[in-house]
Image (cartoon, rainbow, N blue to C red):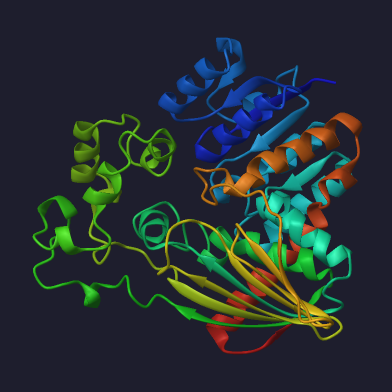
Length: 413
């Protein structure tokens, strides 16, 4: 079966998923909805779409024939309406994370998915990496015994934090959501997937500590182009974005969010006039730049999760899993297993790529699309290993962590 694939929202994520779908050889991209005229035209040209199958709004897809499945990759606060409507039209839906900024909307999406009986998944790409598959093989083989505790780090990256969460679209909670949701609902879903038990209690601490006006260096200007301390600033927009030129992956992201034209002239113009040229200490950001979350699972297992802006920017998570018979340490590329029964240490084979969004999240983007296409083609939701209810559960843990961070209370689920 050839899956007829449409995209609502042809930005970075929607365009990437479409490319991975086309690369399977089992999909045909048949329609797109995108309000931005440059992105819309570029997507249509890449996939040879006729004008009658190119729309400015997702509603055009709802009335269009020749579609089996839709990727909804609109902005976070625009997920609920198209997801519910397209499911109601009998289409399978792959929804970019997060489901929605708040629980009521996520519940309505979950209910729509369950009511429709269609194939549905949220893009929790970490579940689908070769690295995750290697961890699952170790756990399923019983080599760790019972999982007792997990330590997990999401190293956001100093430049990624500045790009997306200080200058970019996810800098303000009211316009997108808390950073734990927009950046790390992946990670809490992944921890719940690996431990395999529901979370019972949550506590969390974190704040916006560094990217604040009072930390602005003496002599700093409002824009990097005008700043005399820019050459020595780790958050220089000039260095970051001009440094993307000549690298096709980095020209797509992060530079694609700054300008559609990858030239020095266009970059400098964007830094002069747009959000991405601002001093990181002179923005209107309010989301955290670091946060820790403590989880207690049913049965007593625990996990400690850290999301930190001030890390190297390679995108790979770091994880330690402690079991009753052994422990496993990984950095997204390598895994080392220690067996307590004989004291041996050995490496576990992993095939891993670039962990960033530009690099496909270490194979997670491609793995997710393959699983989704398989599920659509065979009408078998189980091939995805997840569904609306599992995603709602992990999102609820995120919102519980935010309640704990803001109130200081331990939240019981």
